[in-house]
Amino acid sequence: MGLTMTEKILAKGAGRDEVTPGEIVEVAVDLVMTNDVTAPLSIAEFKKTGLEQVFDPGKVVFVPDHFVPAKDIKAAELAKIMREFAHEQGTLYFEIGRAGIEHVVLPENGLTKPGDIIVGADSHTCTYGAFNCFSTGLGSTDIAAAMALGTTWTRVPESIKFVYYGTLPEGIGGKDLILHTIGLIGVDGALNSAMEFTGPVIDNLSMDGRITMANMAIEAGGDTGIFACDDKTRAFVDAVTDKPYTAYDSDPDATYARIVEIDVTNLRPVVALPHLPSNVHAADDVDDMEIHQVVIGSCTNGRLSDLREVADVLRGRQIHPMVRCIIIPGSQEVAKQAHKEGLADVFLEAGAIWSTSTCGPCLGGHMGILAKGERCVSTTNRNFRGRMGHREAEIILAGPQVAAASAVLGKVASPAALD
Image (cartoon, rainbow, N blue to C red; front, side):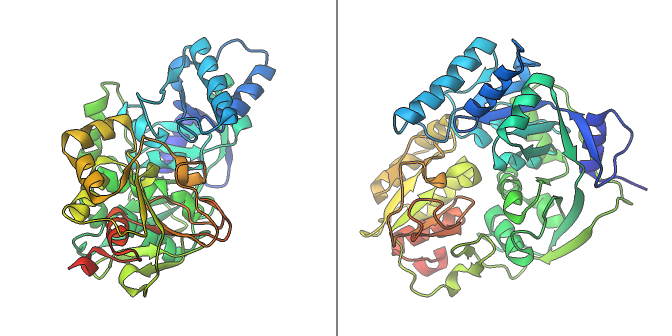
């Protein structure tokens, strides 16, 4: 019986020829990551072990990104704990002004290689499945153990195979695909499973589109989302690292919990209305839903290609006078390139705010908190009640083009409504 790519990667980590869905295995990890919210807890637990050194400083990475620049004294203290421990240990460390949002920064720096097992104290660690990694989020205590031992335990997940076929309409990207998928299966439709994304549409999808899809596997309940390694993957990875890697593909006779086939031919730009990522509708079918804020960025849609799409919509147009539009580059490198290409000028001329790189408003941290009764269109990944501020605020998830069009019109809208 054949194995899925997820099972092969976990078998490699366990030093075995094969593993079976449902069994619990101990695996060696290739990278351990944590951020300014979760790191202090992990560091405190690590110190309880009595160990003086993490298992491998070159495989432990800290990224302050959630509350940066520090919004208050507490946030500054959390970042200080992480910064001092990282420097003391000699681990990988990416500070504000030289980094950005963790799930943008790690791939940029060649830390997400095919075949790797990556664990992070952040639920969207599943992002790295776009690079043929098994990557998943863990709690801070488990991350402390991984920093100490270089191993972690995991339950081998069943795999669900998603096959995307048909002709992808112009203007439809990874965010539309993953929101449409979550709308089909629900927020628990892939619970405790690996979402394996395949098919001719996926073969033609950009790496940024794949990253967006893998990022939101957790919103369908998945342990991870994963893609095969192809020429696009290799081109991305080889451009940022010269370290060797081994890619894994699923066997033709691999066993899946189920197979979901999705024809994308008639797909239109979609949004997820409050208060679940599965509450998905075509943007054009949402009637006169006025908005007060738009957030464009995050680990889901803060990459350069996303910003280019936004600039194409905003160029020569103005943000609606009743809308605050906050645009956040995913990293310092994204911000620098956006300036070189004149994208930042387009945003500023349109009346948007061009922010430093931060998670900020996505988790209701700062730099865009919503008041009672306010409504926001956001390219982030969660629209749960209270996620971005007041519990009586509303969040609508969308792709970059829909978010930009909505900012111009002052209501939920697709780019087609601008014509």
